[in-house]
Length: 111
Image 1: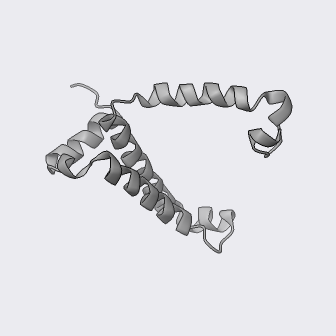
Image 2: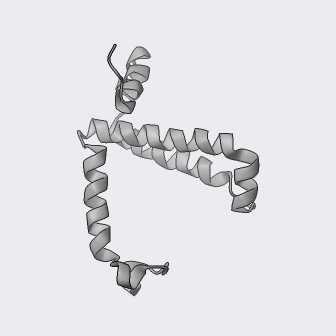
Image 3: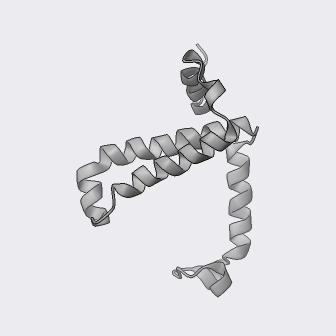
């Protein structure tokens, strides 16, 4: 029995339902934004602690939706998620050197 990775599981779910036809890059990008807004809405007018204590299951669901659509968009564009994250972290390492950014919330242009 072969082990399915996350992308394989997402693609199987999508393909079993013949939904690939609806998942173009534009609509996936829109879906990421919409799901991120649903995640954000959980925190509206509440403290982070209150939301964690009362809505952790909803947080997990909305975060999963954002991640699923993100994986699908990366797959459509033939991007390796590990590679693009590593590349971004490398850029951020240069933009946010430890000696200037440690404990500092300022954007790199303000350091």
